[in-house]
Length: 68
Image (cartoon, rainbow, N blue to C red; front, side):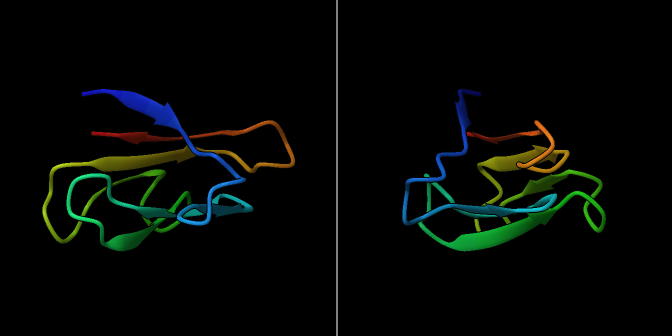
């Protein structure tokens, strides 16, 4: 899988606190990954071919990525 960090300047991604909203690079559907609810990792619920990962908040130096 290829890793790509979440880009705050992209209209298809958003990172607030320890939650990210990303657009799946494979199927194009948008899904949410929560550090609390999903324990920081979630596979695309539509196609299952990408994975969003968030570890910590944006303001506190955390990291968020999309794997495809």
